[in-house]
Structure formats: structure tokens, C-alpha cells
Length: 255
Length: 255
DNA sequence: TACAAACCTGCAAAAAACTGCAAAATCAAT
DNA sequence: ATTGATTTTGCAGTTTTTTGCAGGTTTGTA
Image 1 (tube, each protein chain N blue to C red):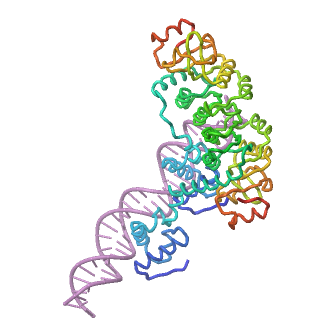
Image 2: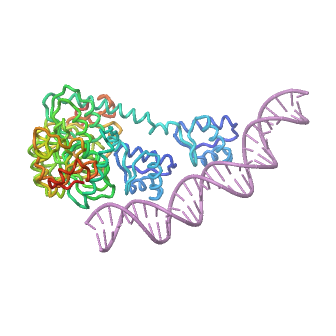
Image 3: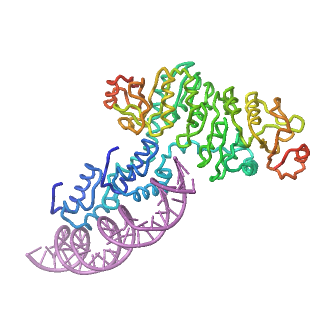
């Protein structure tokens, strides 16, 4: 970083803000070296800018305002909206009298809440929160696959669950997804959950993968299935989005 | 997962939350490796975030709030105070490592919420609301008996459910009760629910009948079991209450 | 029941922040 | 240009924050 000296107070502060916009963070030690002023001066500058609400002061430096917004309330509501978009798209795949296998997860839950009241279909799942949502629906049939409960993921797991799923010939499988990328396909971090999802995919004619775009191109330790086993990829983005083109090219129908 | 170093404290915590939102859980060991700080620092970060209510700290890592928020809405239950009394009495019957079959209903639900956190036992049920309550408990094992869902009563019913229950040798069966009287024993109004309860009683060494006193000496169309099959009768009243004496005389242990 | 991993407590070193103060710089008039 | 008021800056000493570590304890699991 270039050294700049003999700055007036105003100039220093605008320099700090410029750097902050560029890198989203500044360190006091760096600033006082580059501007050739004492740490105290830098600290006082940061303090003033923080009081003016132009940055967030932290121990050792400062962060840009964009930083705090990442996990604010508005962000969580925003992601709720994204999941609602995904939910609507997924519902478009469900036709009358279909048998639908679903996993758990917040995205699936959102879909369960958005199901149109007149829809007639049969939903099969081991996810307790999903079951909870399905029972509120007036017309669908619900089948719970039972066995031991994995309390962390709130789904039933175990041999009996897998067996029951294998007996099903479902039309569609809707899977909430923790991670997906081109090389490793769909991956997850819980062995039992992975086994469940594998069984669901095997028991369904078509598989749809629901995920917010944030989780695209990330991976976890355990593979659920290769990318080519996935028929539909559903995100909140427009199918023409640049981020999704690699998946289109790989043969997945992106919705 | 990519390594990122030289982070400010706020950045570290933000990074943790991002990863948590992405994958629903993080391991301390992973985090301290990826951010290149000591385990102590990670632990302190997680502790602070947990105190701020941004995540759930668990042994070895942390969990996202997204999942646990789902079941937080608790409707006010009819005569909740009385049901709490019944719940406490019923819990007194449960001993360590017991296998307990339970039906559904608000009284059972109240009991599920009152279970002492250190209790270790196995609970088996087909009731979705009960399952929802059981998953929140840190130590119990939970087994869901699965099959078609009866949406009115929110329990699983059908041949497969009955079969599964028959395989169990439970120590105790806790039944929420719609109606009980001296002549007809326990009665109910839903064919499928009655079949489930019959199976549960047959599969248990002891049967406890939970009911508010209001429902004593009333009856419904379908018999679940005769009075002599009931080992314990649990109401909110004192066992010496006049209303209960006929049941004592009939050989039921009134609690 | 034994073992390893995770946890907690207290401590100490390093970095950063704060406090008060005086020197230096800036500004605004003459 | 000079002077006086005001602001800004740097410094010394002290306090706080952060971090890692040593130890002893708890916890989860096989």
C-alpha cells in the first residue's frame, strides 16, 4: 500500500473511507504507518467516523458498514423471501396425485407451507418439522416413515426408514441441500441423513435439488449423489443466471 | 474449506455465522484450523455468539438457530395448569432406561415438555406434536412409528404402525384419554386411534391413563380397553378425592 | 469403565485503547 | 507578520482487550 504523508484531517478520513470501501476492513497499525501519523491520531479519526456512523470501529481497526448488514434481521427476512421463491418453483413440479418424497430442512419446510390448499398428492417424509407442516394441509395424504429419530437433523433414520423408502415408487423427490458443486455433486455432513437421501433418490423417478444460491459450489464430507443423478436444480435465481450455466451445461434442468 | 487468516474478532464471528447459515452446523476443530487461531479463541467466539443468541453452542461446535426456531410457538392449552400437574405425576412413573410408549394429545404434550433434562429413556410414539416436543430433549431416545398420517388426530395410523408397536416390549404406556368410566373402561371416538392405543397397551408391561377429572365418568363410542387393563389412573386431583374412590375400589392405582 | 476430546479457570504477555497534558499546528483577526 | 484563541497532534502512563497456554475437570463414546 502506497505511503501518503502530510495529510489534513479531512483528507485522512476520506482516505480511510476509500480504503474501507475497497477492502471492507482496515487495521489501525496499517493506517498509521501508511499515513505516517501516530496510532492515537488514527484511533481518533476512526472514533469520529464511527460516531458519524460511517464505519464500525472494532478492536484493532474498523469494518465497513456492509459488514454488519450480512447477519442483520433484514438479511434473514431476505433469505426467507428467497426460500419462498424456491418453494413456488418446486411446487410447480408437483402434479395431481403424485407421490412425493421429501427430506427436511428449512427450504422444504417453506415449500410445505406454500402448498396450494386444493392440491391432492401424497407426501412421504421422515422429517418431523415437515410432517408438522403437512398435517396442516387439508387435502394431501401424508406418510411418515418411522424409526429412530436423529435429533440433530430432526428426521427419522435407521434401517427401517431406509427399508420403507425402498418400498416406495415415488414420482418425485424433493431434497433440501446443504452443499452442491460440479465435481462432487450433492454432499452433506451427516452419515444418517446421507443414507436417507440416497434411498429417496433411488426410490424416485425424478430428483429435484432445492438450494439457495449461496450454497452452490460448496461441498461437505459425504456424497449424497453425483450431479448427473439430479434432474432438477431449483434456486432463487433466474435459470439464465451466469452462476447456473455450468450446471445447465452438465445436463441438469435448472429451474 | 478455504483457509482465511488474520481476521479481526468481529470478522471471525461473522465468518462463523456465515458458515453456520450455510451448513447448519460447525465444528470447533474445523474453525480453528481454517481461521488459524487456537481452540480457546474459537470457543470464546462461539460462547459470545451463543450468549448473544445467534447460535446454539453444543459440545464440540455449534448449531444454527434456523432449525430450533421452528417449534417455538406454543399455543395455550386448555386448562394447562391442571395438565402440568398430571404431567409431573406421570413423569414420576418413568425410570431410567425405560421404554415408554405414548399416544398423542395435549396432556401427553404437556408431559413431553416437562421431562427433566437429565432423564435417559426411550420414547416411542406416532404423534407428530409429541415427536416435536421429544426432539427438543437433550438426552432421551426417540422412535417414531411411521405410516399414514391421520391428520385429525395428528398421529400415524395403519397396519405398519400397529405392526411396529407389536414388536416393542415397553415398560410403560402413557395414554392421553378422551373418556373413561367404570363400566366401559377407556373409550374413544376414532377407529384408527383406538386400534393404535390397543396395540400400545398390548405391547406394554404397565398402562397409565392420563386425564383431567372433567373426563372421568364419560364415554365415547369405541372401547380402547376395559378398566381392569389400566394400571395407573393419573388426574390433577388428589388420589384421596371422592370422585376417584370408585376407581380405587375397582383395583386401579390412582395417582 | 477407560480414554480421548472438549471444556473451564486462571494467568500472563502483547496489543490496543483510554486519559490527561503539553507542544505544535491552524485559523482569524489585527 | 504578529498575536491570541482554538484545534490537532503526539506522548507517557495506565487500563482494557485479546489471545494462547498450562492445569485440572467434565463429557461422550466405545
